[in-house]
Image 1 (cartoon, rainbow, N blue to C red):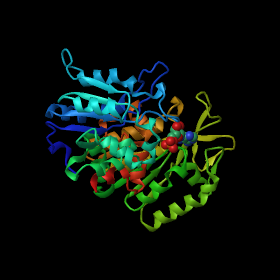
Image 2: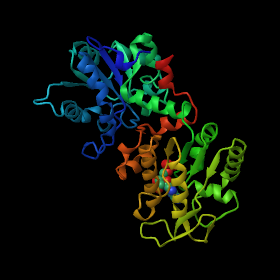
Image 3: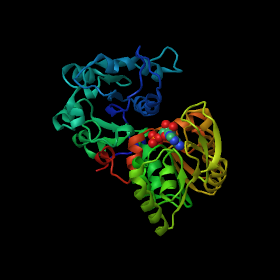
Image 4: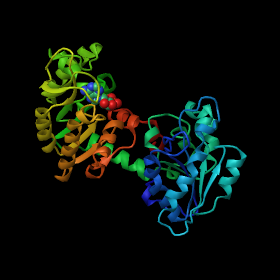
Length: 404
Ligand code: AMP
C-alpha cells in the first residue's frame, strides 16, 4: 500500500470508498452530516494535487434493488456545499451517476477532469456488493486508477467495495484515506503501543455485546472500569442485590469468569461502588443514591453514583492511555446523565494532562458530542461496529485488503 499523504494524485482518477451512510429525514434532508464531513479532507487533498475523485458508498439497507428513498442523489447538493464552503463562487464541480457500474458511470468517470468529483449511485442497489462478488468489484475497479478506502465504518465488512476491490489495484495504487488512516493509527496506538497505566472504560447496556472486547483488553489494560447497565450483571454475579436493574442472567457465569481472569492477569476491574437508582425507567422517576450491590426491590440503577465517579476519576486521572466505549448510565435522560458527563470530563482532563484518549462506539461518541468535549479528547472514532471489532482483536477485511 502507499501512504496517502505522500502520494501525488496529479493526473489520477481516485476511486474512493466513503461512508456516506447518513441519516435522512422524510424530505431527504441530511440530519447528521458527520460522516460526510469526516472525509472531506481526503477528497480535498486529491483535488488540490490535480486529481479527480469518484466516490462510492452505500446508503441504508435497500432490499430489492434501486429505490428512490436510498438514492445517493439526495446527497449531491450538500456534498457540493461542503466542497465549496468558503470558496467564492464555488468551483468544485460535483456530478452524479445514477448507477455505480455500467456505461453511464463508466463514461462520466472517463470524462471527469482534474478537480472534478463524481458521486456514484448506492452500491447496495446490487446484491453483489454485500456478497463480496468479484466480478462486481472488478467492474467498480475500472472506474479509477487508484483505490482509496476512507470508510472505516464499513471496514469490518468483506464487501465488494471495501475489501474485494483492492486486489484489482497494484500495491502502490491502493491506500487508506486520511480518515481511515487516523482511525487505524489511533486504534493501533491504543492496542499495541499503549503507554501504561492504560485504563479502558466500558459501559452501555449489554454484557453480551462487550464480552469479546473486555477479554481482549484483559491482555492489554491496567484498569478496566465497567459502568452502565452491564455493570449490574457483574454486581449480581458477585452476590449483590441489584433490584430491577438491567441484568443478563445467562451471563452471570461469564461475568465471574471475566473477574477471575482479570485477577490472574493482574488487571484491576472497577465496578461502580454506588448508583443513582430510580423507581421506574422514566425521565420523571423518583431517584436516590444507593450502594450498587444493595439496590432495593423495585428500584433500578440508571447511572453511576458520586462515590463511583470519584473513584473512576482518580483512575482515569493517573492513566496515560484511556479508551472509552459506552455510557455510564442512561445519559439520554437528564436525571441520569451526571455519571457519563463526569467521565467525559475526566477523560478530557486526563488528555489535557498528556494522556492519549480514544473515544469510540456510537453512544460514547454521542456523549462527548452532547457535552461538547469531542475536541478535548485525542481521537473520536467514527466507526461503531468496526471499532468494536478492532478492539476485540479481529482482523478487519477492509484494512487487510489494502495492506496485504
Ligand atoms: P450500548 O449500545 O450497549 O453501548 O448501550 C447504550 C445504551 O445503554 C444507552 O442508550 C443507555 O441509555 C443504555 N444504558 C446505560 N446505562 C444503563 C442502565 N444503567 N440501565 C439501562 N440502560 C442503560
